Picture 1 (tube, helix red, strand yellow):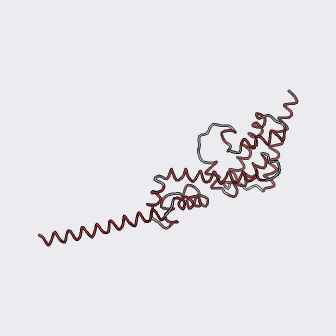
Picture 2: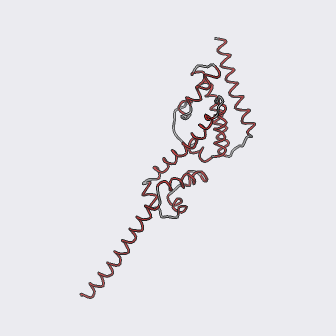
Picture 3: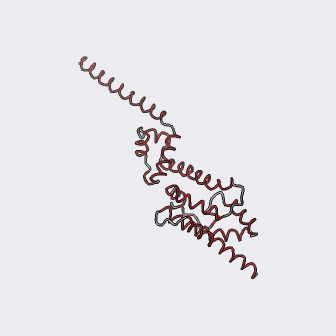
Length: 218
């Protein structure tokens, strides 16, 4: 009986050592793989293949780790997706805001063209920001981004419009621009840059002329 007890003790001790070693290796793996690395890889994965392929196993395979570090830093995939959206939104805002660095007057056509180039160069990022279901109310002020006030101010100053008129002008061009962007990002159509410019200018100046004509009639 004593011999059997000793054998069982040795077996249990062996299992305990193995278990402790697994825990130690697991913790080492968690600390070795950082939150920043996971987020960087996740953003790149979404850039290349879209948000639909994002999951813990796909990330772990790319990083060469288990799924434990993923869930250690991001307890849920919802949290990780929210972080990814924040990163993508910053990339988009930097893309649009780069226009402000120039020394010339920037108006909505420039921003619209830049928006379309973002859809062309980063289609999966565009889909995350502008093509996922968001249940927003209809309206230009609810649909545009942090650059809205800047764009409005340039239109008001350059074309002598009030804010309401500038919003009306933006709304028409925004609907046109968004439609083009969805065509481009989805791969449905790929209009040339020349054609894009032609459509944007026609939409912008056509609506501007209508507003000015209505003001004269009043």
